[in-house]
Length: 231
Image (cartoon, rainbow, N blue to C red; front, side, top):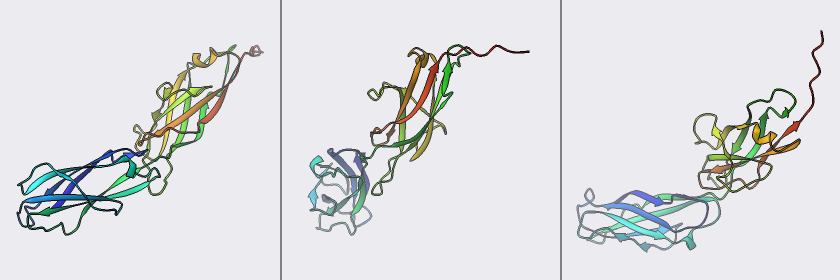
C-alpha cells in the first residue's frame, strides 16, 4: 500500500511533548487489496503498530502517538517513517516519511535603535519614541523556525505579553531575520523622571522560544532650558 498525507501535531516544538501522527494508507493503486496494518518508527528505531481508522477498506486513515519521552530536547530534524500492509502480507515498498522539528534556541536581538535618544523636558517633547530592533533566529542543527514576534519593555523585563508589541517592518513575521518597530508614547518615559532609562527588546520564534538575553538601548530624560534666540 501507499502511505501519504502524513501530519504531526505538533510538527514543530521547543520541548519534548507527545506528538500525534496521522496519515493515510491506500492500496487502491497497488493491488486494490484490503489494508490490514500500519506501522511507524522514529529515528530508525523499532517499528511500532499504528491504529487504523477502519478495517476492511482499501484506503484508511491511521493514528499513532510518539511519546514525549522519545522526543529529543536538542535542536534538530527527526525522521518519522510509516509503512502499510495489505491483506496478503505485503508492506509498502518504500515507507513514507516526514520530519519532527525541535527548536529550543531563542532568537537574538543584536541591535536596538531609539529615535530620539533623549528628551528635554524644557523643550518641545515629541509625541513618541520609535524603537527599531533587529531580530535573528539562529540556524542550529539544520532547524530555524523563524521570528514570530517581539516585545519591548522599559527598564525591567516582565512576562511575555506584558510589553509593547513590535510590528514587522516588512508587514509580516515570517523570516529568520526581521526588522521590527514600535512607537512608544513619550509620556511612558517622561513619567519616570530625570534619568537614563533602558528599552529592552526580546524576540519570539515560531517554536515559542523567547530571547533569553534582551537587546538594549538607552534614552536620556533631562531638563535644560534652551538658550534664548539671539539677534
